[in-house]
Image (cartoon, one colour):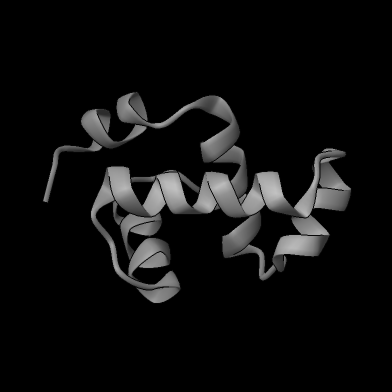
Length: 72
């Protein structure tokens, strides 16, 4: 697994926001409404997050976020 600083440095601020909302159990539509963006944009961000972090599931993403202090 990559060091903490590298994970945050490869993700955009918006992607980090989306990870935080995912860990709070927001679904794509909830995230879109909360951030005032389209559901499709959220889906694209999620796809990019998975690609950049090389995780394969939401559970993996949450574990990665917790291990790397990406959530409060």
